[in-house]
Length: 488
Image (cartoon, rainbow, N blue to C red; front, top):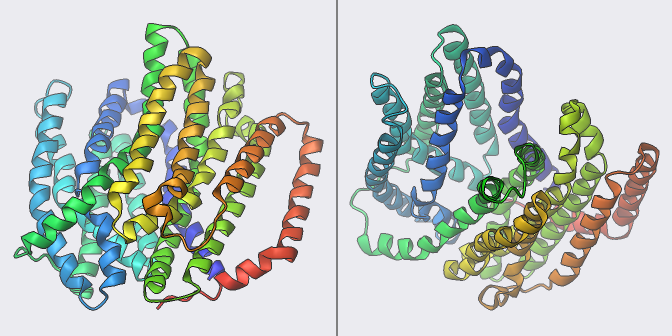
Protein backbone atom coordinates (compact mmCIF):
# COMPACT_ATOMS: atom_id res chain seq x y z
CA UNK A 1 0.00 0.00 0.00
CA UNK A 2 2.75 2.48 0.89
CA UNK A 3 4.52 1.84 -2.42
CA UNK A 4 1.20 2.41 -4.20
CA UNK A 5 0.68 5.75 -2.43
CA UNK A 6 4.17 6.99 -3.26
CA UNK A 7 4.17 5.87 -6.89
CA UNK A 8 0.70 7.21 -7.65
CA UNK A 9 1.43 10.52 -5.90
CA UNK A 10 4.62 10.93 -7.93
CA UNK A 11 2.81 10.16 -11.17
CA UNK A 12 0.11 12.73 -10.38
CA UNK A 13 2.80 15.30 -9.65
CA UNK A 14 4.72 14.56 -12.86
CA UNK A 15 1.55 14.58 -14.96
CA UNK A 16 0.67 18.02 -13.61
CA UNK A 17 4.12 19.59 -13.84
CA UNK A 18 5.84 18.10 -16.88
CA UNK A 19 3.75 20.39 -19.14
CA UNK A 20 4.64 23.30 -16.85
CA UNK A 21 8.34 22.57 -17.30
CA UNK A 22 7.83 22.37 -21.07
CA UNK A 23 6.06 25.73 -20.94
CA UNK A 24 9.20 27.32 -19.47
CA UNK A 25 11.12 26.37 -22.61
CA UNK A 26 8.58 27.82 -25.05
CA UNK A 27 8.13 31.13 -23.20
CA UNK A 28 11.22 32.80 -24.75
CA UNK A 29 9.89 31.86 -28.20
CA UNK A 30 6.30 33.07 -27.80
CA UNK A 31 6.94 36.14 -25.62
CA UNK A 32 8.11 38.14 -28.67
CA UNK A 33 4.54 37.85 -30.02
CA UNK A 34 2.78 38.76 -26.78
CA UNK A 35 2.15 42.06 -25.03
CA UNK A 36 1.61 43.08 -21.43
CA UNK A 37 -2.08 43.51 -22.32
CA UNK A 38 -2.22 39.86 -23.47
CA UNK A 39 -0.87 38.71 -20.11
CA UNK A 40 -3.28 41.02 -18.29
CA UNK A 41 -6.35 39.63 -20.08
CA UNK A 42 -5.21 36.03 -19.56
CA UNK A 43 -4.34 36.50 -15.89
CA UNK A 44 -7.45 38.51 -15.03
CA UNK A 45 -9.74 36.01 -16.78
CA UNK A 46 -8.56 33.10 -14.67
CA UNK A 47 -8.41 35.30 -11.61
CA UNK A 48 -12.13 36.08 -11.93
CA UNK A 49 -12.95 32.47 -12.78
CA UNK A 50 -11.11 31.44 -9.61
CA UNK A 51 -13.02 34.03 -7.60
CA UNK A 52 -16.35 32.56 -8.78
CA UNK A 53 -15.29 28.89 -8.72
CA UNK A 54 -16.52 28.28 -5.18
CA UNK A 55 -20.10 28.54 -6.46
CA UNK A 56 -19.55 26.31 -9.50
CA UNK A 57 -21.09 23.21 -7.88
CA UNK A 58 -22.53 24.55 -4.59
CA UNK A 59 -20.09 22.21 -2.81
CA UNK A 60 -22.01 19.09 -3.91
CA UNK A 61 -19.08 17.33 -5.57
CA UNK A 62 -17.32 17.23 -2.20
CA UNK A 63 -20.14 14.99 -0.93
CA UNK A 64 -19.89 12.44 -3.75
CA UNK A 65 -17.53 10.24 -1.77
CA UNK A 66 -20.07 9.93 1.05
CA UNK A 67 -22.60 8.10 -1.11
CA UNK A 68 -19.80 6.15 -2.82
CA UNK A 69 -18.56 4.70 0.47
CA UNK A 70 -21.79 4.66 2.48
CA UNK A 71 -24.28 3.53 -0.18
CA UNK A 72 -22.28 1.31 -2.50
CA UNK A 73 -25.34 -0.42 -3.95
CA UNK A 74 -27.19 2.74 -4.95
CA UNK A 75 -24.51 5.45 -5.27
CA UNK A 76 -24.77 5.57 -9.07
CA UNK A 77 -28.43 6.56 -8.89
CA UNK A 78 -27.57 9.26 -6.33
CA UNK A 79 -24.70 10.55 -8.47
CA UNK A 80 -27.01 10.62 -11.51
CA UNK A 81 -29.42 12.87 -9.62
CA UNK A 82 -26.61 15.18 -8.53
CA UNK A 83 -25.32 15.35 -12.11
CA UNK A 84 -28.79 16.09 -13.50
CA UNK A 85 -29.32 18.92 -11.02
CA UNK A 86 -25.87 20.38 -11.54
CA UNK A 87 -26.21 20.26 -15.34
CA UNK A 88 -29.20 22.58 -15.01
CA UNK A 89 -27.52 24.70 -12.35
CA UNK A 90 -24.43 25.17 -14.52
CA UNK A 91 -26.58 26.91 -17.13
CA UNK A 92 -27.40 29.58 -14.56
CA UNK A 93 -23.86 29.69 -13.17
CA UNK A 94 -22.38 29.87 -16.68
CA UNK A 95 -24.71 32.73 -17.63
CA UNK A 96 -23.53 34.70 -14.59
CA UNK A 97 -19.87 34.02 -15.40
CA UNK A 98 -20.31 35.03 -19.05
CA UNK A 99 -22.16 38.19 -18.02
CA UNK A 100 -19.39 39.20 -15.62
CA UNK A 101 -16.64 38.50 -18.16
CA UNK A 102 -18.49 40.45 -20.84
CA UNK A 103 -18.94 43.44 -18.54
CA UNK A 104 -15.26 43.43 -17.50
CA UNK A 105 -13.64 42.72 -20.88
CA UNK A 106 -15.99 44.36 -23.40
CA UNK A 107 -13.62 47.34 -23.72
CA UNK A 108 -10.38 45.33 -23.37
CA UNK A 109 -10.97 42.72 -26.05
CA UNK A 110 -11.49 43.87 -29.64
CA UNK A 111 -15.13 43.79 -30.75
CA UNK A 112 -14.59 41.19 -33.46
CA UNK A 113 -12.73 38.87 -31.02
CA UNK A 114 -15.07 39.32 -28.06
CA UNK A 115 -17.65 36.63 -29.08
CA UNK A 116 -14.83 34.14 -29.72
CA UNK A 117 -13.26 34.96 -26.36
CA UNK A 118 -16.60 34.55 -24.54
CA UNK A 119 -17.30 31.22 -26.28
CA UNK A 120 -13.83 29.81 -25.58
CA UNK A 121 -14.17 30.64 -21.88
CA UNK A 122 -17.90 30.14 -21.36
CA UNK A 123 -18.53 26.77 -23.05
CA UNK A 124 -16.01 24.87 -20.87
CA UNK A 125 -17.49 26.50 -17.76
CA UNK A 126 -21.03 25.42 -18.68
CA UNK A 127 -20.37 22.00 -20.25
CA UNK A 128 -16.82 20.63 -20.08
CA UNK A 129 -15.40 21.27 -16.60
CA UNK A 130 -18.14 19.58 -14.60
CA UNK A 131 -17.89 16.25 -16.41
CA UNK A 132 -14.14 16.18 -15.80
CA UNK A 133 -14.60 16.88 -12.08
CA UNK A 134 -17.05 14.01 -11.61
CA UNK A 135 -14.96 11.64 -13.73
CA UNK A 136 -11.76 12.39 -11.84
CA UNK A 137 -13.43 11.75 -8.50
CA UNK A 138 -14.89 8.43 -9.62
CA UNK A 139 -11.49 7.26 -10.92
CA UNK A 140 -9.87 8.21 -7.62
CA UNK A 141 -12.50 6.46 -5.52
CA UNK A 142 -12.25 3.33 -7.66
CA UNK A 143 -8.43 3.37 -7.38
CA UNK A 144 -8.10 3.97 -11.14
CA UNK A 145 -5.52 6.72 -10.73
CA UNK A 146 -3.71 5.77 -13.92
CA UNK A 147 -6.69 6.94 -15.98
CA UNK A 148 -6.44 10.37 -14.32
CA UNK A 149 -2.75 11.04 -14.72
CA UNK A 150 -2.77 9.76 -18.32
CA UNK A 151 -5.57 12.21 -19.14
CA UNK A 152 -3.76 14.99 -17.26
CA UNK A 153 -0.54 14.40 -19.16
CA UNK A 154 -2.27 14.29 -22.58
CA UNK A 155 -4.24 17.43 -21.72
CA UNK A 156 -1.02 19.20 -20.71
CA UNK A 157 0.75 18.22 -23.92
CA UNK A 158 -2.21 19.48 -25.97
CA UNK A 159 -2.17 22.77 -24.11
CA UNK A 160 1.55 23.39 -24.65
CA UNK A 161 1.64 22.33 -28.31
CA UNK A 162 -1.46 24.30 -29.34
CA UNK A 163 -0.30 27.35 -27.37
CA UNK A 164 2.99 27.29 -29.26
CA UNK A 165 1.33 26.81 -32.65
CA UNK A 166 -1.36 29.49 -32.25
CA UNK A 167 0.93 32.14 -30.73
CA UNK A 168 4.26 31.47 -32.43
CA UNK A 169 3.08 30.31 -35.86
CA UNK A 170 -0.32 31.99 -36.23
CA UNK A 171 0.49 35.15 -34.19
CA UNK A 172 -2.89 35.01 -32.43
CA UNK A 173 -1.79 36.64 -29.18
CA UNK A 174 -3.72 35.98 -25.97
CA UNK A 175 -6.52 34.17 -27.82
CA UNK A 176 -4.05 31.32 -28.47
CA UNK A 177 -4.02 30.52 -24.75
CA UNK A 178 -7.81 30.23 -24.68
CA UNK A 179 -7.90 28.10 -27.82
CA UNK A 180 -5.38 25.66 -26.32
CA UNK A 181 -7.30 25.55 -23.03
CA UNK A 182 -10.57 24.95 -24.91
CA UNK A 183 -9.13 22.03 -26.91
CA UNK A 184 -7.56 20.46 -23.82
CA UNK A 185 -10.80 20.77 -21.86
CA UNK A 186 -12.80 19.35 -24.78
CA UNK A 187 -10.50 16.32 -24.78
CA UNK A 188 -11.05 15.87 -21.02
CA UNK A 189 -14.81 16.25 -21.51
CA UNK A 190 -14.88 13.47 -24.14
CA UNK A 191 -12.45 11.27 -22.16
CA UNK A 192 -14.34 11.44 -18.87
CA UNK A 193 -17.74 11.61 -20.60
CA UNK A 194 -17.13 8.23 -22.27
CA UNK A 195 -15.87 6.83 -18.96
CA UNK A 196 -18.84 8.07 -16.91
CA UNK A 197 -21.77 7.84 -19.31
CA UNK A 198 -20.87 4.72 -21.30
CA UNK A 199 -18.38 2.65 -19.28
CA UNK A 200 -19.81 3.25 -15.79
CA UNK A 201 -23.32 4.19 -17.02
CA UNK A 202 -23.61 7.10 -14.60
CA UNK A 203 -25.83 9.43 -16.63
CA UNK A 204 -27.70 12.65 -15.76
CA UNK A 205 -31.11 12.09 -14.19
CA UNK A 206 -33.15 15.26 -14.68
CA UNK A 207 -36.04 13.79 -12.68
CA UNK A 208 -34.00 14.15 -9.52
CA UNK A 209 -35.54 14.16 -6.07
CA UNK A 210 -35.86 17.78 -4.96
CA UNK A 211 -35.88 16.78 -1.30
CA UNK A 212 -32.65 14.77 -1.68
CA UNK A 213 -30.84 17.48 -3.62
CA UNK A 214 -32.14 20.24 -1.33
CA UNK A 215 -30.98 18.38 1.76
CA UNK A 216 -27.50 17.78 0.31
CA UNK A 217 -27.18 21.38 -0.87
CA UNK A 218 -27.84 22.56 2.70
CA UNK A 219 -25.08 20.23 3.89
CA UNK A 220 -22.70 21.25 1.10
CA UNK A 221 -23.05 25.05 1.20
CA UNK A 222 -20.70 25.45 4.19
CA UNK A 223 -18.01 23.82 2.02
CA UNK A 224 -17.87 26.91 -0.21
CA UNK A 225 -15.85 28.94 2.35
CA UNK A 226 -13.49 25.97 2.49
CA UNK A 227 -12.53 26.64 -1.13
CA UNK A 228 -12.14 30.35 -0.48
CA UNK A 229 -9.93 29.91 2.59
CA UNK A 230 -7.16 28.52 0.40
CA UNK A 231 -7.81 31.25 -2.16
CA UNK A 232 -7.53 33.96 0.51
CA UNK A 233 -4.31 32.57 2.00
CA UNK A 234 -2.71 32.04 -1.42
CA UNK A 235 -3.78 35.27 -3.10
CA UNK A 236 -5.05 37.92 -0.67
CA UNK A 237 -1.56 38.72 0.60
CA UNK A 238 -0.38 39.73 -2.90
CA UNK A 239 -3.18 42.27 -3.27
CA UNK A 240 -2.64 43.61 0.25
CA UNK A 241 1.10 43.93 -0.32
CA UNK A 242 0.37 45.98 -3.43
CA UNK A 243 -2.14 48.10 -1.49
CA UNK A 244 0.34 48.90 1.28
CA UNK A 245 3.06 49.55 -1.30
CA UNK A 246 0.90 52.20 -2.94
CA UNK A 247 -0.59 53.72 0.21
CA UNK A 248 2.18 53.50 2.81
CA UNK A 249 5.35 52.46 1.03
CA UNK A 250 5.75 49.49 3.40
CA UNK A 251 7.15 47.34 0.60
CA UNK A 252 8.59 47.85 -2.86
CA UNK A 253 7.68 46.29 -6.20
CA UNK A 254 11.01 44.46 -6.14
CA UNK A 255 10.20 42.87 -2.79
CA UNK A 256 6.77 41.80 -4.03
CA UNK A 257 8.48 40.19 -7.02
CA UNK A 258 10.85 38.27 -4.75
CA UNK A 259 7.93 37.24 -2.55
CA UNK A 260 6.10 35.88 -5.61
CA UNK A 261 9.17 33.89 -6.68
CA UNK A 262 9.58 32.46 -3.18
CA UNK A 263 5.89 31.68 -2.73
CA UNK A 264 5.52 30.10 -6.16
CA UNK A 265 8.53 27.85 -5.55
CA UNK A 266 7.11 26.83 -2.16
CA UNK A 267 3.90 25.86 -3.94
CA UNK A 268 5.78 23.14 -5.82
CA UNK A 269 6.31 21.44 -2.47
CA UNK A 270 2.66 22.08 -1.60
CA UNK A 271 1.61 20.56 -4.91
CA UNK A 272 3.35 17.31 -4.11
CA UNK A 273 1.48 17.18 -0.81
CA UNK A 274 -1.69 17.86 -2.79
CA UNK A 275 -0.85 14.94 -5.09
CA UNK A 276 -0.45 12.69 -2.02
CA UNK A 277 -3.78 14.07 -0.76
CA UNK A 278 -5.44 12.95 -4.01
CA UNK A 279 -4.30 9.37 -3.41
CA UNK A 280 -4.72 9.22 0.37
CA UNK A 281 -8.21 10.74 0.72
CA UNK A 282 -10.02 7.75 -0.87
CA UNK A 283 -8.08 5.50 1.53
CA UNK A 284 -9.21 7.64 4.48
CA UNK A 285 -12.83 7.40 3.36
CA UNK A 286 -12.54 3.64 3.03
CA UNK A 287 -11.14 3.45 6.58
CA UNK A 288 -13.87 5.75 7.90
CA UNK A 289 -16.50 3.55 6.26
CA UNK A 290 -14.91 0.46 7.83
CA UNK A 291 -14.84 2.20 11.21
CA UNK A 292 -18.54 3.05 10.99
CA UNK A 293 -19.21 -0.63 10.21
CA UNK A 294 -17.36 -1.71 13.34
CA UNK A 295 -13.82 -2.01 12.02
CA UNK A 296 -11.61 -1.88 15.11
CA UNK A 297 -8.32 -1.12 13.39
CA UNK A 298 -9.58 1.61 11.04
CA UNK A 299 -8.90 4.52 13.40
CA UNK A 300 -5.41 3.26 14.24
CA UNK A 301 -4.52 2.73 10.57
CA UNK A 302 -5.75 6.21 9.68
CA UNK A 303 -3.66 7.70 12.48
CA UNK A 304 -0.56 5.74 11.39
CA UNK A 305 -0.93 6.88 7.79
CA UNK A 306 -1.49 10.50 8.83
CA UNK A 307 1.54 10.57 11.14
CA UNK A 308 3.75 8.86 8.57
CA UNK A 309 2.69 11.39 5.93
CA UNK A 310 3.30 14.26 8.37
CA UNK A 311 6.74 12.92 9.33
CA UNK A 312 7.86 12.48 5.72
CA UNK A 313 6.48 15.91 4.81
CA UNK A 314 8.30 17.51 7.73
CA UNK A 315 11.65 15.91 6.92
CA UNK A 316 11.30 16.58 3.19
CA UNK A 317 10.38 20.20 3.85
CA UNK A 318 13.38 20.68 6.13
CA UNK A 319 15.73 19.07 3.61
CA UNK A 320 14.40 21.31 0.83
CA UNK A 321 14.75 24.43 2.99
CA UNK A 322 18.29 23.44 3.93
CA UNK A 323 19.41 23.60 0.29
CA UNK A 324 16.90 26.21 -0.87
CA UNK A 325 19.46 29.01 -1.25
CA UNK A 326 21.61 26.93 -3.59
CA UNK A 327 18.60 25.68 -5.58
CA UNK A 328 17.17 29.15 -6.20
CA UNK A 329 20.61 30.60 -7.00
CA UNK A 330 20.86 27.97 -9.74
CA UNK A 331 17.33 28.59 -11.09
CA UNK A 332 17.48 32.40 -10.75
CA UNK A 333 21.15 33.34 -11.22
CA UNK A 334 20.57 37.12 -11.35
CA UNK A 335 21.82 38.98 -8.26
CA UNK A 336 18.48 40.80 -7.90
CA UNK A 337 16.76 37.45 -7.19
CA UNK A 338 19.23 36.34 -4.53
CA UNK A 339 17.02 37.03 -1.50
CA UNK A 340 13.95 35.16 -2.78
CA UNK A 341 14.86 32.02 -0.83
CA UNK A 342 14.39 33.86 2.47
CA UNK A 343 10.67 34.16 1.81
CA UNK A 344 10.18 30.48 0.90
CA UNK A 345 11.37 28.72 4.04
CA UNK A 346 8.45 29.36 6.40
CA UNK A 347 5.91 28.90 3.59
CA UNK A 348 7.37 25.48 2.76
CA UNK A 349 7.31 24.42 6.40
CA UNK A 350 3.76 25.75 6.84
CA UNK A 351 2.60 23.58 3.92
CA UNK A 352 3.39 20.54 6.08
CA UNK A 353 -0.02 21.27 7.65
CA UNK A 354 -1.88 19.25 5.01
CA UNK A 355 -1.76 15.71 6.53
CA UNK A 356 -3.36 16.91 9.76
CA UNK A 357 -5.86 19.06 7.86
CA UNK A 358 -6.91 16.19 5.59
CA UNK A 359 -7.40 13.83 8.54
CA UNK A 360 -9.90 16.16 10.22
CA UNK A 361 -11.56 17.49 7.04
CA UNK A 362 -12.18 14.06 5.52
CA UNK A 363 -13.70 12.92 8.79
CA UNK A 364 -15.97 16.01 8.87
CA UNK A 365 -17.09 15.55 5.25
CA UNK A 366 -17.71 11.82 5.78
CA UNK A 367 -19.98 12.59 8.75
CA UNK A 368 -21.48 15.63 6.96
CA UNK A 369 -20.45 17.97 9.79
CA UNK A 370 -19.77 20.70 7.27
CA UNK A 371 -21.00 23.64 9.38
CA UNK A 372 -18.33 22.86 11.97
CA UNK A 373 -15.71 23.11 9.23
CA UNK A 374 -16.38 26.85 8.99
CA UNK A 375 -14.57 27.22 12.31
CA UNK A 376 -11.47 26.01 10.49
CA UNK A 377 -11.63 27.15 6.89
CA UNK A 378 -13.48 30.45 7.13
CA UNK A 379 -11.60 31.51 10.25
CA UNK A 380 -8.26 30.67 8.58
CA UNK A 381 -9.06 32.93 5.62
CA UNK A 382 -10.27 35.78 7.83
CA UNK A 383 -7.26 35.31 10.11
CA UNK A 384 -4.99 35.72 7.09
CA UNK A 385 -6.61 39.02 6.14
CA UNK A 386 -6.68 40.36 9.70
CA UNK A 387 -3.05 39.51 10.48
CA UNK A 388 -1.88 40.93 7.14
CA UNK A 389 -3.54 44.24 8.04
CA UNK A 390 -1.52 44.27 11.26
CA UNK A 391 1.82 42.74 10.27
CA UNK A 392 2.48 44.12 6.76
CA UNK A 393 2.60 47.77 7.96
CA UNK A 394 4.91 46.67 10.80
CA UNK A 395 7.20 44.14 9.11
CA UNK A 396 6.58 44.47 5.38
CA UNK A 397 7.17 41.28 3.37
CA UNK A 398 8.20 39.38 6.49
CA UNK A 399 4.79 40.19 7.97
CA UNK A 400 3.08 38.54 5.00
CA UNK A 401 5.31 35.45 5.39
CA UNK A 402 4.54 35.20 9.12
CA UNK A 403 0.82 35.60 8.46
CA UNK A 404 0.78 32.83 5.86
CA UNK A 405 2.64 30.51 8.25
CA UNK A 406 0.19 31.17 11.09
CA UNK A 407 -2.88 30.80 8.85
CA UNK A 408 -1.77 27.50 7.33
CA UNK A 409 -0.80 26.05 10.72
CA UNK A 410 -4.14 27.12 12.19
CA UNK A 411 -5.98 25.43 9.32
CA UNK A 412 -3.99 22.23 9.85
CA UNK A 413 -4.44 21.83 13.59
CA UNK A 414 -7.65 23.68 14.52
CA UNK A 415 -9.80 20.67 13.68
CA UNK A 416 -8.42 18.78 16.68
CA UNK A 417 -9.82 21.50 18.96
CA UNK A 418 -13.29 21.81 17.43
CA UNK A 419 -15.45 19.78 19.79
CA UNK A 420 -18.01 18.73 17.17
CA UNK A 421 -15.22 17.16 15.09
CA UNK A 422 -12.77 15.97 17.71
CA UNK A 423 -15.36 13.82 19.48
CA UNK A 424 -15.22 11.36 16.57
CA UNK A 425 -11.46 10.77 16.93
CA UNK A 426 -10.91 7.33 18.41
CA UNK A 427 -7.15 7.89 18.50
CA UNK A 428 -5.04 10.52 20.27
CA UNK A 429 -2.99 12.32 17.63
CA UNK A 430 -1.23 14.50 20.23
CA UNK A 431 -1.77 17.61 18.10
CA UNK A 432 -0.09 19.99 20.54
CA UNK A 433 3.10 17.93 20.50
CA UNK A 434 3.04 17.77 16.70
CA UNK A 435 2.45 21.52 16.54
CA UNK A 436 5.47 22.14 18.77
CA UNK A 437 7.60 19.84 16.62
CA UNK A 438 6.50 21.70 13.48
CA UNK A 439 7.38 25.02 15.10
CA UNK A 440 10.81 23.80 16.24
CA UNK A 441 11.70 22.26 12.86
CA UNK A 442 10.50 25.43 11.08
CA UNK A 443 12.71 27.59 13.30
CA UNK A 444 15.65 25.28 12.71
CA UNK A 445 15.08 25.37 8.94
CA UNK A 446 14.98 29.18 8.95
CA UNK A 447 18.27 29.30 10.88
CA UNK A 448 19.96 26.59 8.77
CA UNK A 449 19.18 28.17 5.39
CA UNK A 450 22.37 30.30 5.50
CA UNK A 451 24.81 27.65 6.76
CA UNK A 452 27.98 26.91 4.83
CA UNK A 453 27.56 24.12 2.28
CA UNK A 454 29.99 21.85 4.17
CA UNK A 455 27.79 22.09 7.25
CA UNK A 456 24.73 21.43 5.11
CA UNK A 457 26.27 18.20 3.80
CA UNK A 458 26.91 17.03 7.36
CA UNK A 459 23.37 18.02 8.37
CA UNK A 460 21.91 16.11 5.42
CA UNK A 461 23.92 13.01 6.42
CA UNK A 462 22.61 13.33 9.98
CA UNK A 463 19.06 13.55 8.62
CA UNK A 464 19.49 10.26 6.77
CA UNK A 465 20.97 8.68 9.91
CA UNK A 466 18.04 9.95 11.97
CA UNK A 467 15.65 8.54 9.38
CA UNK A 468 17.36 5.16 9.61
CA UNK A 469 17.07 5.13 13.42
CA UNK A 470 13.41 6.11 13.22
CA UNK A 471 12.73 3.29 10.75
CA UNK A 472 14.52 0.75 12.92
CA UNK A 473 12.69 1.85 16.07
CA UNK A 474 9.10 2.61 15.04
CA UNK A 475 8.90 3.29 11.32
CA UNK A 476 8.86 -0.28 10.11
CA UNK A 477 5.96 -1.11 12.42
CA UNK A 478 3.94 1.85 11.10
CA UNK A 479 4.72 0.90 7.51
CA UNK A 480 3.80 -2.73 8.11
CA UNK A 481 0.44 -1.65 9.55
CA UNK A 482 -0.23 0.69 6.62
CA UNK A 483 0.64 -2.00 4.10
CA UNK A 484 -2.18 -4.11 5.50
CA UNK A 485 -4.68 -1.66 4.03
CA UNK A 486 -6.33 -3.05 0.93
CA UNK A 487 -8.86 -1.54 -1.45
CA UNK A 488 -12.14 -3.39 -1.55
